[in-house]
Amino acid sequence: MPALLPPTKLLFLVALVALLVPICRASVGDDLPEFISCVKGCVRRECNSDPPTPLPLHLRLLFWSCPAECDYVCQRHITHMRSETGEPVEQFHGKWPFYRVLGVQEPFSVLFSVLNGYQFYRGLQLIKKDFPNSYPPRSIFIFGAYLGMAAWFFSAVFHTRDSIPTERRSQISLSGPQRKFAPWVYVWGALCVTAYAAHVSFLQFVRWDYTYNMAANVVVGLCQNVLWLYYTLSRYDRERKPWAIWPAAIVLWVCCAMSLELLDFPPLFDVLDAHALWHAATILPTMWMYRFLIQEAKDDLYGKRLKM
Image (cartoon, rainbow, N blue to C red; front, side, top):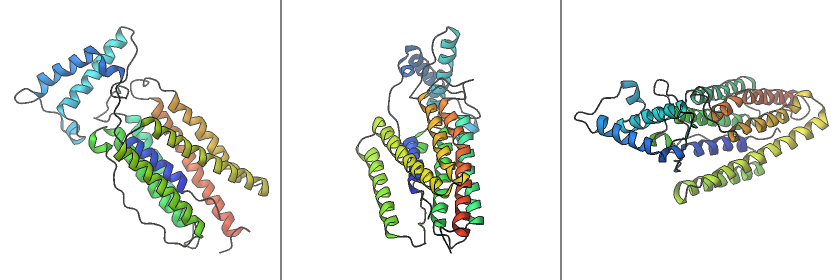
């Protein structure tokens, strides 16, 4: 039976929670006197006037308020002034001062999140088409595809508008797989779900700790990569099938792409930052992994490993 994927999908969900849980930390830009003065003056003129200056409909649909609009306008103004005088671009509220497009805060992160989600949708269609109901892991792969689509949907929502409604962890009801598996599969799944629930509960109800959350993501990601490498290399050593090595290449790809998260830099052209590039770099590996799963399923169904 091929390796199961709950750890992979749990990593997506943990990453989603990391995006949706409020991050409370000060940035250099927050304390700039000119920024503070700009926001106060804008709020006094535009928001506290009678009547307040109305916002365009498309901004109101994305939950922009008058104070939030003042904050954005001042971020852009201060950033432009600092660039004109050769001063470095600073972050505000833990984020770079992106140029907004039709009210969307991080347009490229939204675009790449949607494209990632679309790869899971394509994978779901391939699984339903090519995997017979009798194939044991089919229901788990379907569950994982729905989970991946949900994760990237909420990633797109978050990057569209970073506000309290989008930061709240969304409750998603998903039905569990129906097929029977070996007892150890249920034990492993229960352990993963328990660990994930404990992690989220600590962040939500005890204390938000950014360093701890990032460390947890790294540990889960490393464990997943090690397991995939072991599975891939051991199978390739036994069978010498070229496609069996694909997950190892995918793991190396993702590990290299993760360096983008460490190379934080002001957004290019005010819209494209390292985080958006990280999202872009995960599109191809997702498609590639689904092609591997399909190839492996065919080998299981028509080869020696699994006779239905």
